[in-house]
Length: 343
Image (cartoon, rainbow, N blue to C red):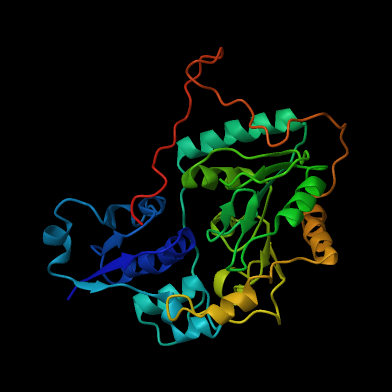
């Protein structure tokens, strides 16, 4: 019986399912049905899969596509090889979808950035370079999806995100030499200038921005998967999650700084709810000064340092984006998709 695959979870999970599904379509069933329970727009970046994907609320989906198929919901977090750090997300999906008996080599994430998202990124980056008078751009994603903000307090009990004090230090140092684009939709509570930009962009526009940047710096979150797929050099700082599971140590363009090594325990997400592991892991992203310096050096060693004249900049100012009412009379590039189709 033919199969239909239901894919759910965060952006990283969706992206990491794509290589295995592409292989399945090419080698097993060219008419494979993929039902996206979240982030449907990401599947549309795969030229191979975009015609095989349906959102959960597609009219008549059950009768037309699912009734005569076996329903498969691959769950990489419940794979023994995954929670014992023998494979990463791409390999875990590959094992579950393609029934590999041995751990396969990790397949490449193939994503295609649309022309409208490339144009958005090009205009944004050009404006930021002009504003800050620097030639190179670093995208910095400081928070994972589990971060929470309450008034002026930002916490991440999962131990994946940078602390605010470290974010400020790192950004101030990097902004001496590069344009820094902060990849976040959370307002960071600061009272001093750190010379960074926080654009309002959707997940596909961020794909274009990372593709047009010179370097990516981040934690265990979606940006690092984009950087890997788009062959961008990156520094990834891990805390509560294992590099073997969630990132790409085999990527020669990646520098992995494992701050949680020998301190964390595995958190069995989607298997059990372990409060003890959460309490152990919640502080593993607290960085020592030498680690902060190593993070900064990993970027400057790759990109070099730039001499420039200091200018007064508005903190976290967003540069002008052309709109229908501005004097330039250029139409604004609107986001092509909503943030999320289904939870």
